[in-house]
Image (cartoon, rainbow, N blue to C red; front, side, top):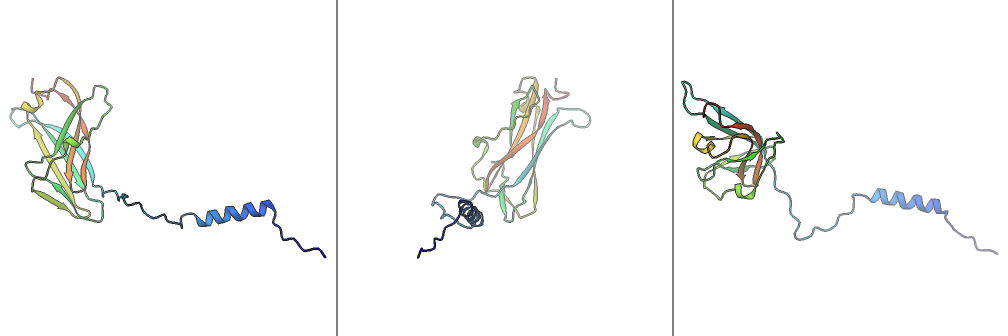
Length: 170
């Protein structure tokens, strides 16, 4: 008597392998490596720049501002001290390409003056640059970037383009 042979067709085996692989996706977790870190929570930042001309004449200044919002679920501090003002950088931008630059050198050490942003809170940071600060730049179009130091790290964004020299400062 012949022993019955239990065999499976190649297509049946392929189907079992595919179904097993699909059902197992996402269920297996590899142990975390000891150096794995969770990314820090991010604050949202928007920037703007506009010229201020005093009523009745006088020197034109540049007002640069950043609106920092906490969309996370935890409180994050923003350094607001005099030793750590809103970081402002200029980059020549004759093409209007809006290059935004954020460099570690824009971060500052602890100034001791912080504002804690609770989830959903918003903070407006401003800095006014007078004609003496703006006079160091050659005439032309400049892209302005802003940066703020937070407990989660340095954040920044493009704040707009300005034409220098400032209107009325010739």
